[in-house]
Amino acid sequence: MGARSGWLYCAAAVPLLLLRFLAAVSASVEDLDDSFKDNRKDDIWLVDFYAPWCGHCKKLEPVWQEVGIEMKNSGSLIKVGKMDATVHSSIASEFGVRGFPTIKLLKGDLAYNYRGPRTKDDIVEFANRVAGPLIRTVPSQQMFDHVQTRHHVLFVYVGGESTLKEKYIEVASELIVYTYFYSASEEVLPEYVTLNEIPTVLVFKDSTYFIYDEYEDGSLSSWINKERFEGYLNIDGFTLYELGDTGKLVAIAVVDDKNTSAEHTRLKNIMKEIAKNYRDQFHRDFQFGHMHGSDYINSLLMDELNVPAVVVLNTSNQQYFLPPKHIESTEDMIMFINSILEGTVEVQGGDGILQRIRRVIYDAKSTVVSVFKSSPLLGCFLFGLPLGVISIMCYGICTADTAEEIPTKEMGDRELTDEGSDEDQEEGSIKEITADASEGEQAEKNVLDKKED
Image (cartoon, rainbow, N blue to C red; front, top):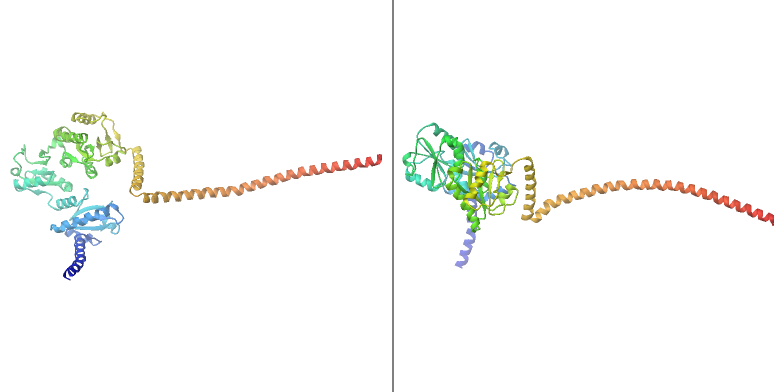
C-alpha cells in the first residue's frame, strides 16, 4: 500500500515539476511587444529578432532559452528577450533588422550586433563583454595573469591621458563586439614585457605580445582589427566571414580533422610553423589556419577540392589562389605565398558578371540537390508539381492550336471536294453527250439496215 501511494505521489509530482520548469524557462526569456520601445532604455537587453517561418530561428530557439536561463542563474543584469519581427516590423526596422535571426545587445542608445557562432557560450560571452565597461582596468599583476588565462586575445593601453588613449577608446566602442579592451600601468604588466615608450597599445596573444607602431602599422583601428585574431585559427564559416573585415588574404589548409594520416597533419603543421616563425614577414598580409572538410570551400570556389589541399582566399572580392604544385614542405608554402605577393600566380574566381551568373546557376543547382538529398518526397513535390502544371498548360496550348487547324483543313477539303465534283460533273456531261451521240449513230445505222432489207 505504501509503495503504491509512493508511485501515486511521484506521478503527481512530475507534472508539477514540469510546469515549474516551463515557467522558469518562460520567465528567463521575455516575449517583447510594441511597449518595449519606450521601456528598454532603463535596462540592458539581449534580444533575438526572429520570424516564425525562419528555419535558422527555430534552430536557435532552444539555444536562446539556455542563454536566458544562464543569464538568470548567474545573477546578470542583462535581460533576455525575443521579438517577432514580422509582427513588430516597425521596431525591427528601427533597429536595422534585415535578416533572421538577428541578435542585438541594446545598451542605452547603443545597439551592438552579434555575428559569432550561435552557441550558448559564445552568445553569453558576447553579452557579458559588451554589457560591461568599455575599457576594463587591471589593478594588479595577479589580476593581469588571471585575465590572460581567460582570453586568447586582449588589447591593453598603457599610459595616462593622451591622444592615443582617445583613439583607443574610440576604437574600443566600435570593436568591443569582437574582443576585450583593458588599461593598466607599466608595473602591472608581466616582467617579460619591454616598452620603449609610453603611452602605447599592446596586444597579448599566441603566448607573446606585440606593440602597436603607428609608422609601420597605420591607423590604430586598422591594426586592432587585424590583430584581434590569433595567428593560427581553426576556421569555420563565421570566422571566415569576420576575417573579411581585416583585408588579409586567408591561407587555409583544407583537411579532415578525423584523418590522422601524415599528409593531413603535415599541411596543418606547415601552416602553424609559418604563422609562428614567419609572422614578421607575412602577418600584415596573411591569416593562417585550417578548415575541417571541403564543403564550405567548395561552395565558395564553385569547384571540388581534393582533401587535403591548400587554398588562399581573398574574401573581399571572392578571388582565390591554388598552388601550381603540391605543397610538400614549409619552403614550398613560402614560395607559393611570395608568388602571390609578386603577382605571378594565376588569379581565379572574382566577382565579375560571368562569375555572378555562374554563382546563380551554382546556387540554384546546389539548392535543388540539397532538397532532394534531405527529403526526396519534398523535392518531388516542390519541383514536380510546377513542372506538371507547366506540362499541362503546354499540352493545352498545343491541343487548342490543333483543334483550330482541323476545321480549317476540313473546310479546305470540302472546297477541294466541291471543286472535284464540278469537274466530275463536266466529265459526266461529256460522257452523257458521247453516249447520246453513240446511241443516235446506232439507231441511224439500224434504220439503214432495215431499208436495205
